[in-house]
Amino acid sequence: MTTPDADTGDKASVTVRCQVNASIGVTFCDRFSFDADSVHYAVELRAPGLTARVNEVVAWIWDSDLTTFLEELAADYRGWDGERSWQTNDRDLTVSAVFRSRGHVGLTWALRPWTQDAGGWGASVTTWLEAGEQMTSLAADVRAFLAEEHQ
Image (cartoon, one colour):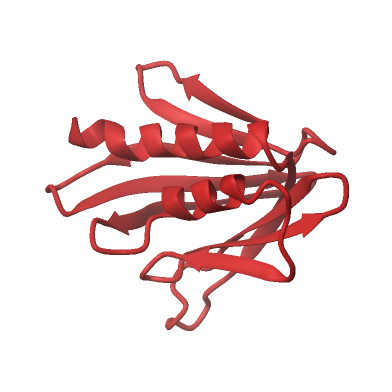
């Protein structure tokens, strides 16, 4: 289930909560932009015993868009075989999707900043959503979050 949130200070954010365990989630927040070519934002992962955050994930206008990936998953609500994945150009955010019986999509959100540096780290959580309405809502919420800065 997704929730477009309004933080104090009127900063937009989107939270994805796992349908199976609401203590597992992903939040997109702290969006900003330097120019018309990119949007920068933070991604936070939460699960029991885990909190991880990357402060500056970058979405470039010429890259394959996260919202397009999520919209394609939502459009295929009847399911697919195998795993589908998407990643940012810098590979600091990766999303993998699998379809399971009874119309549920497992989205594994992985953060791996500084992949080329010594001492890099990685963390991931998996959220389960309904293939139809919840995936459509997630795609719309993420699209609105990423596009708001350019309006």
